[in-house]
Length: 229
Image (cartoon, rainbow, N blue to C red; front, side, top):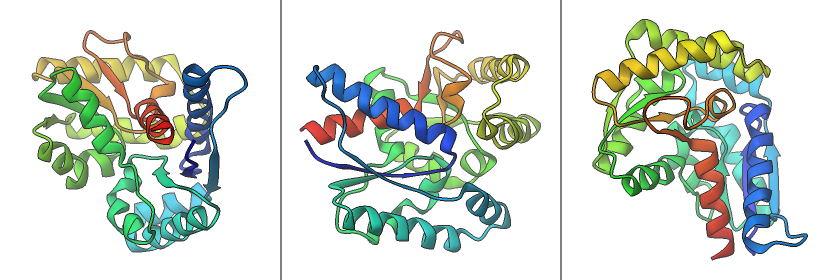
């Protein structure tokens, strides 16, 4: 079994989900007392969030590159960034180490293609929805992306930072997210990417009329497949 290196803490709420899913996936495949070989570097999300909102992506890259190098020194065979937004600087992180980086967007694209989905809605932080890095990588896989309207994007972003990253999962927010998803479906989305690793704690596939793709769950499953290959 290969050792999975996880850059976590963005937020720790979703990092604990990653840890659980990695171990559940290994146990499901190997049985008995098997669990995942994982090394974790968990950053201070307050520092990252402040830099994100200040637009200082180079400083965030420096922090995550240091984390990736620490994971490599600790014996990680490959690396996960346990957040969607910070894949904006995934290329910089990948270049800072000699082990592979398992990219969350590529994993998600593979799941979409397996379901023959060519037009997908995207929920996430405003950085993820509005900046081109996420949509461009999906489009390179032949997948068209639909994002919510501006006021909806602001709402989705606010709920992520002020509720989900604080461990609050409110029914009223869930219903509002489902209304936004219904709007994306009306615009032709055949499924919706839960493109923030905390959203899968608020919504599950089956909550909406179209499929929902939990990026944290997909990322963790793909990591275990790679670790056991």
